[in-house]
Image (cartoon, rainbow, N blue to C red; front, side, top):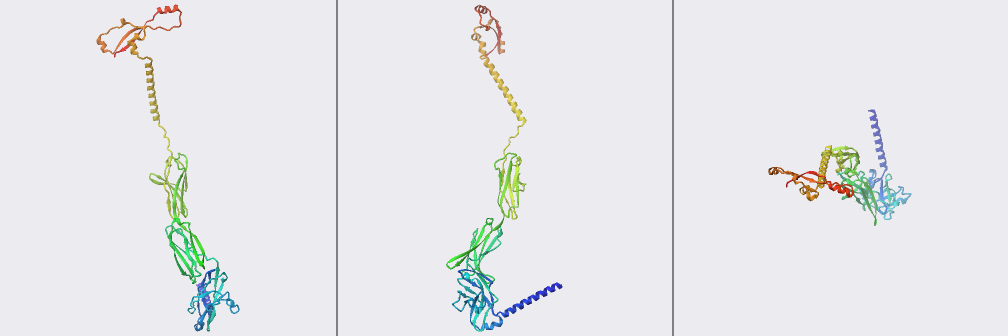
Length: 456
């Protein structure tokens, strides 16, 4: 508690000293001006100095009694008695070193001043003085404004935060100082989308002027990493000077253009190696990849990596797709087909048995047909030879006497008759002498053959 009371007492003492010091200083100040601490100006253009002043109470009567009040600007110092050249402007004289004009009403304590066609040499500190016909004359030696004159215009300012989420409404502001409000800069945008800017001239807290331009748009992932440029165009005499500022849009969006690919893409054989790759565009980058295979009409997770490699088995064939996820959302690819080459199925032993049996049967049939044909070609026209034995071989004669007759009834019941004939065969012998040939002719061999004749 004591510590708190001590702190409070110290703070109160400091406040009293500050107020006392201010009162003492102000009591010594015959003129109290209000103006910016610094001001930027563009060479060849004009510069406007916002200025106001107050008269302390002890001097207010003297001010009210004065007439023909003039405003004077001192450059670099306040001791104009010893250095009269520091008086660079006097509103009541036409021979001032600086071309300018006090556009404020001095009787209303407004000392706003415009200097025209400023030069680089104008860069310095400036003090304001009231010079009047009467008892009141005063210079504020405690307040000054520092003017910087440069050949290029100051760089505009733009909204620092350009990180937005996709689909949100975004407003960007660009501001450029207007040191010469009579000829303010014109702000133009280079923007990745169509947008109509809104411009206006505003007064800053230090009473300086600025041109502000605002654009509004709905962010898209297509805007990500696109440059936005705001350009300030300052008129200077008959020409222009420009300054610009750039910002890069950072649009946060869920995975887009997610795609799945299979390598090789042609049908593959069982046992071969296949690579599945998932790719996507996202900001922030994708944090998780998941591979799915369509099984029985439902997706089944098969991998949690961007690149999925597998040694193919028959069950791996089918449709696949991948899913990419980041902090904003997710995106799925289209389905791709992993095709597997068809395999020859093993033949059942039963099939081999059937084929073998059929082959054996066909072989037997062919052999039977072949031997039948051979037999037939070996004994052609057998029936004709039997019916006419004498025509086929002169050496064969019928032995009619040895054919037994049978009754007619029996002939009708039987389809075949048996005939006996005597056939003489001549055996081939080696070349013989005439004597041997003579003996051979006298020798004949007789053989009987049973011939079946079928009636027709």
